[in-house]
Image 1 (cartoon, rainbow, N blue to C red):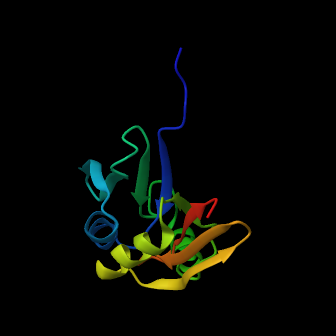
Image 2 (image 1 turned 60 degrees about the vertical axis):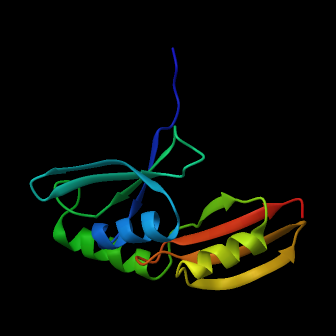
Length: 135
């Protein structure tokens, strides 16, 4: 029997905006983009991790009521969720490449704790950290 985590979800305020960011700026690719009425199942993958999907989901019915969906959007926008971490071979080169694609960083690459890392946020407010381990 094979078991493992296949999809990890993020809350996004606008799935079209998230699509443009994750595909157009981060270079991910679409795995699934299916609609069922007002609900959209949108998952993307990093090109070097084809077995793992990142779900870009809107807080909405039927999972959340309207008040909860608003509260979740507000928390994400404030950066309240823990950051996602992407390992890179060269943090400074990844920083330059992503900046050239329009990613706005909240922290430039800095060496600390035996690593070099930089931070950015997606359009919904989800934090990301790129880390060059063992620098």
